[in-house]
Amino acid sequence: MPAINQQFTSDPVLTAIAVGYSNPKEVLIADKVSPRSTVTGEEFTYTKYETEANFTVPDLQVGPRSQVKRLEIEGTEITDRCLDYGLDIPLDNRTIAKAEKKGHKPRDRAVERGTNLLLLAREVRVAKMCSNPANYGSGLAAVLSGTSMFSDPASDPVELLLEYLDKPLIRPNQLVFGSEVWTRTRTNPNVVKCLFPNSNGKGVVTKEALAELLEVDEILVGKGRINSKKPGEAPVIEPAWGNMISGQYHDPTADFMSGGMTFSLTAEHEGFTSGTIPDASMGVKGGELVRTAEMIKELVIASQTAFLLTNVIDQG
View 1 (cartoon, rainbow, N blue to C red):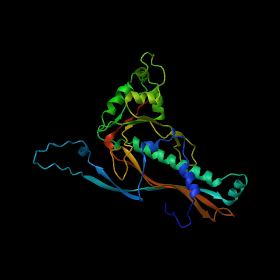
View 2: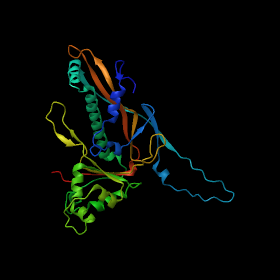
View 3: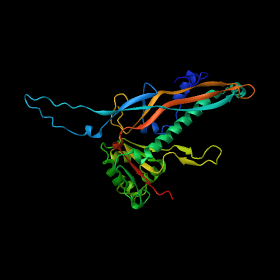
View 4: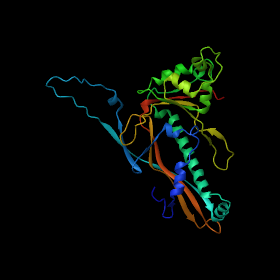
């Protein structure tokens, strides 16, 4: 990452902490929902292909002396750029000295804290992207109501999910649930009966069992939580992933260089970086800012390869 200003010193040790730090894998799911793909510069280009070109089959029969048909693959080249995200954590020199005498490493802790907040902010952005009906193709977003809501004992989540899994141009291979929605889905009596036919509908199903039943590779549950209030206000802790289910197709080989039909990718330039900036104005002995930053851009690549269900449960 280029110097943010002339005083910024990128520290390889602190950068390694930023790269290596992560929340428990079951808590934050943004990197699976919108996988990171490296781009060579802050500005990057990628090709968006017309959907019908991938599904229209021409007449390929060739006569003995006829010319073999040619197919021109046409697409729209799109230019975009990564956005800067960063956080400074101030440490005054007096505090640094006291902490180091006790064997603590305040800069390391500052990097871990900064990285955690960067990852949480990314989780919120990806959750908002996936919850926005405008990011899905025509007929691929629905608002549930009444007995179709999974919190209603009369609902049939398996039937509805199978119906929507068949709607996109490519069948989704993963499902993303908000945490509360997943709890109500896995205890829905008709879901339990599908997996345990001899039961009375009371029980709990696992992600793996429901994924196998629906023939998807994985079920992801967003368990991250955020404070929805501004600093200084009384905190209100809410789930980062709301009242929604998104089914998405992801091609693990897709990237910004070679393309690929996939729901979402994140352009990443240079990954996490961290370092320090001297601040002589901090206290009587000065201090420093520990900066952690990344340059990324989350994008929907193929809106026709996913579906969205909102208002899935009654939260009243």
